[in-house]
Length: 199
Image 1 (cartoon, rainbow, N blue to C red):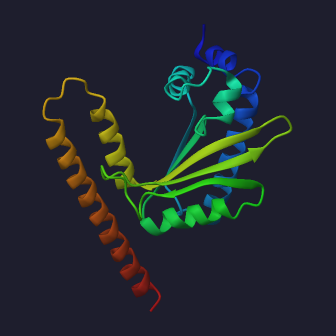
Image 2 (cartoon, rainbow, N blue to C red):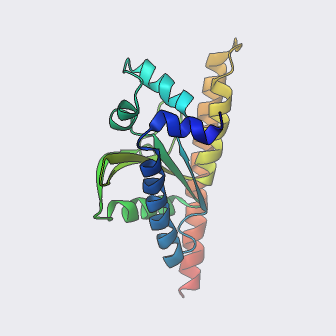
């Protein structure tokens, strides 16, 4: 069975609608980048794999169905937007929130209030209405350094045979704080350059 067929079978009858909704959000993001080419660097997107979605439903003690996947889990459709600077993260957030066609379901600023492990990102969940179903879309907006840290932390936290886990978590937290400090410094440098250019 091909990978596409697995997705179609699991999310039936909503898979095509999920793809259309994802494309709609991506077109909106492309539009704001046309207006300001530097507002973000790039974005990545995906529909959650059937295996990952099944596991998430089981973890929540929910029946494994396509309806539960879309009505009970909010990240079946996921988009991540990577920005160069902190200010750009909030500019993208404002643009997404200003779209009157979408309903805002979740708004979590893990940059202003990082998770205990040091994770930083801005999370939105929007609801996109279609003719047949309302599809939630999770959007993560973060800086390049926040994304680098999150990817590395994700790789390492699933290693099974770790004996010094507490020390590693402390070091990861320290690295997250250093990345955050660099983001602030880069934002300051950018503002100084812009101030000079306006003189």
